[in-house]
Length: 339
Image 1: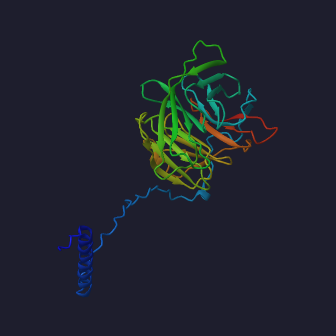
Image 2: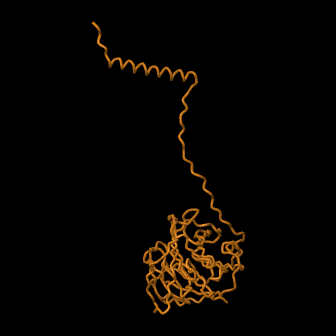
Image 3: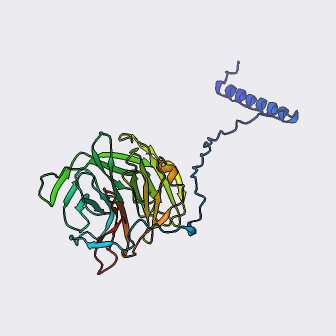
């Protein structure tokens, strides 16, 4: 009798034979030195970061003298509004003679307040579409429409250096001709200029506008250091702009600054002192910041000095102070008259 053909058993024998054959081949390869070259994992490499270079001045900050162009003792007045206790910036109007713009910083209403050298209440502007994340300075200067004056509000405070970008709000100065003061106005049309630092997030409290070029300058607030950056005109209001490094100053914790209307004078202040530059005719702001400054008079009469600005007519400069953390102190406006 013929023995039936067992398919399953035959398949099993074939598989077993194939496996043994593979073992023999692998052993032979190993004995003859042959080997299978493994494929190496590819690791993505990050391109090298280009270092951000800041030019540095060569003068010794300890050797500065004091300018004699301004009175050493200011005329000081209290603000009429006693609710404004976190005043941070100050800027002079180019449209309304003697008018000053001031504001509170982080966590306060999205409002700019109008006053003057006497501290009077001249009104309130509300930026209806914007929030006050940390408004730290304010400036007035030209903008995109020739012949118009603009207010620039700097939302640049960042004590924990955690924000990827900062914002400058720009809107035309309101024409107060014929209006009864104090005024209350809503500002609905605001340009948003979003900026990024080239070397990482940082805290800043200083905004300056070059009235000749319309360039925007920001100075960082750091221990014994202030990095100054610029956003050249025309500033982009759609995409994020990376700031350009200008200069690294050995200046401690800058809280405010300003550029004069003719572009020949610069002020940079802290709580303790004010630096003043008088630039030769034709020298740019960027180049001027590398030259040696002088001290400007400061009477040390402000518990937490924050803002500084030139008078619109060049007759002197104003300073102001925050008083929230100093019980019993009143917010003030001080004016240092040019001699």
